[in-house]
Length: 348
Image (tube, rainbow, N blue to C red; front, side):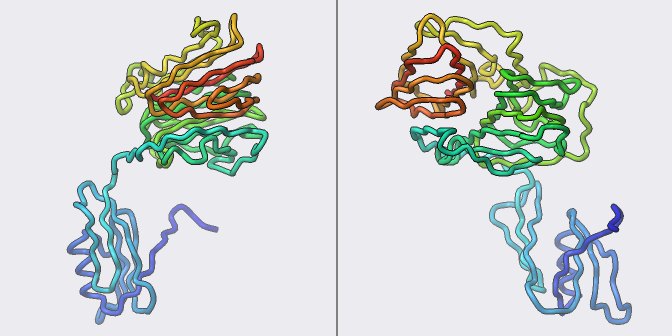
């Protein structure tokens, strides 16, 4: 049975101990934990920078280490006397936003309702398979079984990330935002950069839509932080953005366009203009014409109901279908069902 006090070592072959030991201790700041035999040392265990190494005679791959540093310089790679390559990398590199590759995207639930297994038992369905050049990711996430979740306190290195509950409910907790709370269908949150959070529990059949930029971003665990923190800081700044919790039941509908209605979430203000999110529904009209936009993203997801998307032809829309309209193109909806609810996310 393994115990928390058990230690692991990375074995590196080393047939000439002293110069390699001098390199790791003198140049990289490792310390000697074990060394033997005393009269002619050939084996040593050393530790430093979050790793424990064992140097001992032998053949094979001398290994490749990545050492994260505050200021590693550019492209530095060192080689120890035993042949081990040490790559010096930045400990906290900036978020890289790939260039946008505009494209019209139409993802139909009926054509591919399957999902892939993701983190913490979540099933992910990709809504923008091409990722617009790697700039955006949109996922239709479900937790079929519900219940308590094996999630942990974590955060994301992102520019923009939001979560909208389509069906069911989910219990979550966020850093400095009070006690855990339940998000119901129609609710959403803005997860600003690096805010620590955890998903605690979900109803059977939970479905959410998550959109992030960039598409490829890191999820980092924070085992030192306990949530809730006991603080409520609604005005706290997280990387230039504010935490936002939108409660659909408390939000009025307002007129939008010619005959539609819109439920705003307040996301444009919380992101300081980076992204917006709102829900549309038919009012006096079943048709909606939209002018061309000049932004990065115009994303739509059919929460409920049906419609016909007009964009260089007609495209029937059903529940859980998603689309992206490229900049410079006018588009519209027609023949919308009375129960249509369309989630729109815009990055201007």
